[in-house]
Image (cartoon, rainbow, N blue to C red; front, side, top):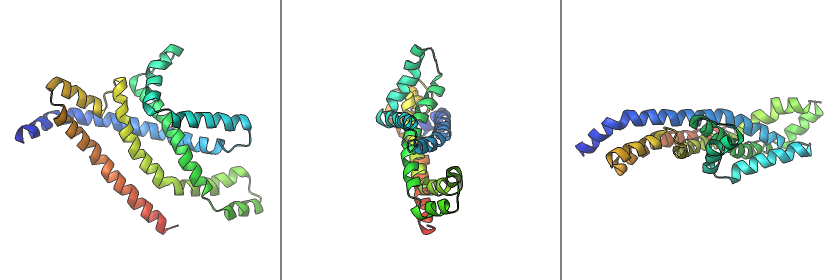
Length: 218
């Protein structure tokens, strides 16, 4: 046991560097993907047929294609079109697309949960559609969708481990390199899993608390 603890102590800094990369990828993907998800949630309901169909295509590809495929396309496929991305940029681009596609459905459900009576009241007051969205529909819809969005953010941290396949030095990649050099895969993967759990478990509990608190105020 002492030997395992010494091994962990030796390689923990390297894994923490990988965890920092994982958090950066996750944070960037969420910061880009969720606003795009809001835009897609609105445009899939647009009256314009071309806009609606374009949005649906983006959403369905993002949801239908595994995140791993999107990663491979961004890193290995785009250079064939003359666009080369670093592994970090490719990971952010692919996971942002996946985030936008999935969160668009979460946000759309939240927007549809806004009581119809409030929308009718806005119409009676002569509010424009833009004002209805800005002051009534979007704020309330995002509040309803917030717990699901937070839960999805936890899943995206876990999904960032897929960036291991495009040589991004995130947590899993660092663990694999250590395992390859020391032949102690199980030991280092247990530590990597513990680092993921140290963030995901408290985050999941926080989401549950937030959801209960939100239910009491609705």
